Length: 267
Ligand code: DGL
Image (cartoon, rainbow, N blue to C red):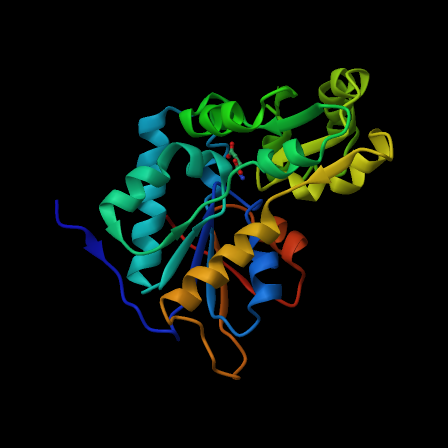
């Protein structure tokens, strides 16, 4: 099969997509590490959450997002969604000749650092059920108890503007109580929406529990891949940063800050 090709010039944008607004947690890490880079962020909020959809549906949604970013000649695509990564990235890499960076739950660092030998993982149903997640967990969980919790409802609350709500606090308490009882010392956030929960999680969890997300690792990997492909943007001009959503503009703005302009797009 002939792969669909992208443009490869260092001035071209980094494309980022997620099933909604959560991937902005990854975009922020990338922007902070690579402030000269132009970028395009696609929030597919209309189709959130991906985590409860079938594999075929998730792949079709990912292809739609990738093709939009390719129309804008992105030089690399960040799949800023654990669910999309674990379910679709292998397929995307086969179909499109462009570098893809995905995001996966950081099981490895948590397993290496745990002292209680109990770690918690909060992720979507789709991520927990995926082969990629099961494979990674079986490699790194030797001698360690991994408490998996499916975060159903969390993405929906965030996408509905209820990040700081009583409903969210009650849901998180319900999800975390068994982990607290099991004395986890690391909580792995396996969804790019979840870093926005950190202030609430800190109120619920004992203070010795470390919260781990993969945003910084994704940013570092993006830099490594761009450097290797001679695609780092060396320009000192202010970068062009585009944010598109097929859902609520104010919601996306509330997470990235009002200095960035968000546009509605039909996709
Ligand atoms: N941000 C997505 C992830 O990292 C949310 C998942 C979903 O849409 O269910 O998995």
